[in-house]
Image 1 (cartoon, rainbow, N blue to C red):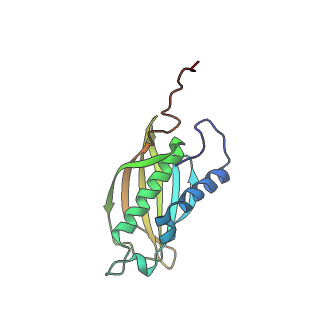
Image 2 (tube, rainbow, N blue to C red):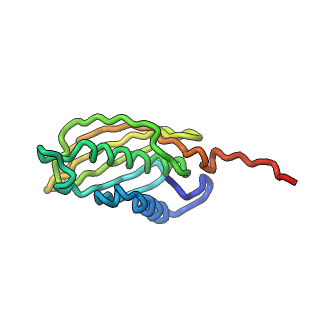
Image 3 (cartoon, rainbow, N blue to C red):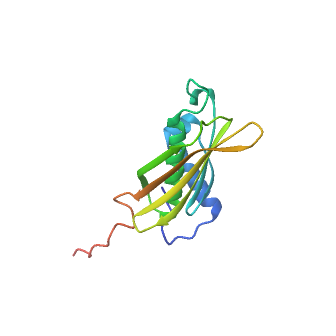
Length: 160
């Protein structure tokens, strides 16, 4: 996820701006209107206006949308902790109640970061018209570095 090297110092604003550029490069995220509201090493907050097109026949958010929110927030949290390009290796989600409201918020954090993966947790809440939040899903996932990430490359001896 990250274009910032592991040892590079960057401002919080630059991290958030970079994260927003990554999100903007994801056609599906753009299609549904996802917004990155916060990004710091090991932490991410993704928000989504809950429009009629994202709901299922009973009037609440489709499970795939709730799952997308958890997956992407987990990946941003893990990527910002690892500071190299990443992908989701696996994740599990528990839906605890229907996502009813005007907005979804996914808040994720890295719980453990190793050299090639991060284990992250996420809470997805639905925000009602009056601003109250209700937990609708919990997720946990493993975020892995891409095979060609800088952390995995080893320097080769110079060829003559």
